[in-house]
Image (cartoon, rainbow, N blue to C red; front, side, top):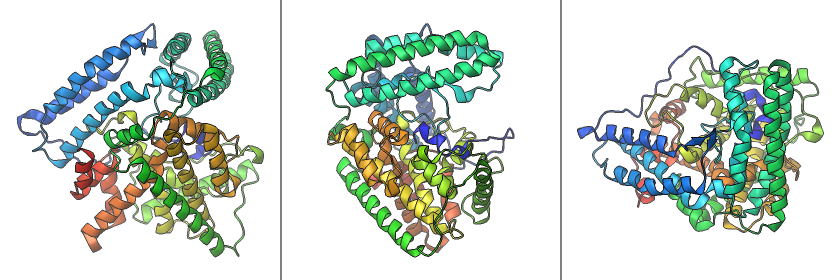
Length: 547
């Protein structure tokens, strides 16, 4: 989910408690395979994770052509060492870990060969982020020196002040390197870089105003960073009219990436069909729900900040109580969702997710499964799965499960007391299918960014996607930079439902939703195809992927 979405439903910000109450990650186990081979895998994984980190020169991560070439030269050695480890006799859970490590190595290979964010994607050079992502890592490629303001408490302590000072001081150098590295004329991606720098300039102005009251000595550094951001934006704007390059990666590379890195068992063409089917179903079911509810009063947005806050408190409490009392999944005591939604956004500025939230909080509370999973994963100490996978390899699992959970809770009865809220679930699904189709058609080269936005505006129910929507422009920027992220909501949902069906067939009357979800959650945020192998023993999908 794009970080700008968080402005639309701030009520789901994480509030982790200080007490440590461990959730049982009962599977997978980490027994040592004969000969210590599994430990060899863990050691290699840790070495690889250190290897992918860039070196820093005066606080600036080095993505120059020389540094990239050095990584290209050394990567085959890591892949050869992995190939020398034979996992054939290991337990399935450890073989899954082996495939996770291999997927990450293939992810770096793809980044070096095809994606090349340092040379193609201006948004890679982000300098400031104001909100926490609701998924394991920031969605899409991003330079590691970014200043994540949400990680600091204000007023700053000495450590925080020193850290912010160093990151701000590096901004001019980061953007100077960006100008030298961005050698490919990916026009739509450059357009999104301009939008990003507009937002960063405004955020830096806000940071300067904040620091002027508590840490005025940092303000000159903020001002220099903002000057560098404005200069970089101007450079992008001057170059933009000369650019003619496409931003999508093409169908063949999309297929390779999905199959080899994200371990998604559906090709581009199959995903087009599946996404269209989900869109058609969502629109049909929306109309059926509207017909069913036609005699009920329509949902109305809150009129005041007080009413907004009251709704948030009531519905968060109801949602968490529903999870606990209806045997949906185990809810440890540390799990919390914040209840403060912020100030009421004026009607003319309400974007898609704000519209949904203001009509009823519950559908997006279902998607806030993300935040509950982040709290659970904070206690995950597994050597491979306890750290977020690189290259958004977790996307089909994280976004797919959160999307599936919306309709799962509809069927479980969450909206029985307010049937009109069921309509919002299908509006959400339709919008996710719309964005997924944009992802697919942008990378095939069939649509430009402007054409994709026009499609989204026309296809989204109730006119809730405006042409000037920050949500749709931000989402499409992400999908161009991170192929397949837009499809992961819908395709991951389909994979989730298939896995649930598999377990239903295997267990028959013994199947329970709570046991299924607890088992799923205990295995970490890994591709659903691997979860299917591990949870069901059905390995046909994985064997086909690994050919």
